[in-house]
Amino acid sequence: MRRGPKPAKSKVEAKPPAVHKSRKEDGSDVGDVEKRLAEALREKTEAVKREAETLEQQTATAEILRIIGSSPTDAQPVFDAIAINALRLCEAQGAVVVRYDGALLHVVAHHNVNPEAIDRIKRQYPMPPDRHLPMGQAVLDGAVVQVVDLQATEAFSGSVARQFGARGHVNIPLLLQGRAIGAIGISRPTLGPFSDRQIELLRTFAAQAVTAMENVRLFNETKEALEQQTATAEILRVISSSPADIQPVVDAIAAKAQDLCQAKTGAVFRFDGELIHVVAAHSFNLEAVEAHRQTYPTPPGRGGTTARAILSRAVVYIPDIREDPEYEHQTLAKATDYLSALAVPMLHEGEAVGAITVTRAEAGAFTQRQIELLKTFADQAVIAIENVRLFKELQEKNKALTQAHAQVSEAL
Image 1 (cartoon, helix red, strand yellow):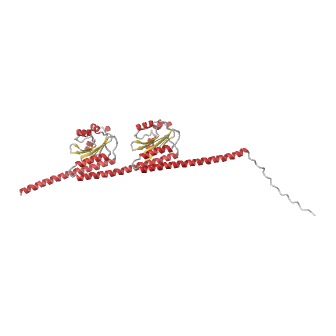
Image 2 (image 1 turned 135 degrees about the vertical axis):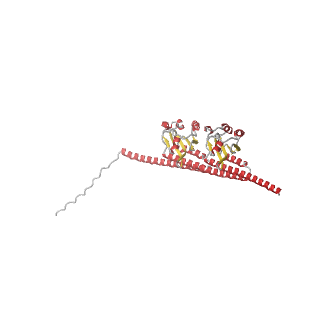
Image 3 (image 1 turned 30 degrees about the vertical axis):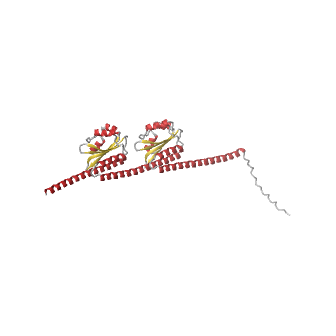
């Protein structure tokens, strides 16, 4: 009996030899894990730091907003808070805030500035914006000016911060409708730029400063408008109660003009067609009174503010009498202690019948709003003068009529 073929033995797959990691490779894996853990820890730490910075910044901006809300008539507390917080949150050494009035830069706040630097700043400001200074360039361009190393930047060699060792420096303009109305400047002795995050924080502070300034401006404008309306109503009341006497009216106008124009003195003058006479004066000392007695009456001319306004039948404003080559009343100005003067003519049917004049001890501009107020007062003075003239004419006519009636009665 034949035997069948023996079944083939199944092939057994060969197992690959075991690979044993070296101690060096084991250490590499551990190192990778440690690196990943360290990176995760670093990222976590940075995230916590960013959250803390964000919270600090939010707290600071909220505090400044609170100050803005509680100081509707004064931006100074806001400027001070911005200088302090800009310094602290941007890790800077010194901070300065300036306001720009359209002509000059004025320092309104500073924090942690070297006392010698403060003295130099006080001598330098107010000043027109200058491109040779970072602050001036920021205002003129309405853009951020960042200087990585102020000591190495010859273009800004006149900077006070540079002269006192600052290196990293940045200026942020205060922008209102695209126009700079001030700037925030911070500096530090270390080299390098401020971060984008810090610059954005300064932009936020700048926007808050603008909000504070606008709030104060609008509040003051509303207050001034109310005061002016009250003053004009008061003068109209005096006019109606003094139909036969101009003196109470011009006295009230001189006082209100001096007060509402924030002037040193206020005065009203009458022009009789030939000479100018002082008819009312407010806040004149004895020396000023005597000086005016020696100067008036005087004819119209170019030598004085009042005389020039009556001669030209137009508003005359002299910001600084020392710089006006035609001004002749230097003795009067010294006695009255003024450097700037504004005169508005009183016009009746196009002819000057007098003027209202206000002065200030310091050189500087009266506002257009104040000029318009004096024009209103001038119109009221003319009304009062005409009222008195008509009242007296009526009295004379009545007197003449009474006399004529008496004569007729006697004849009968």
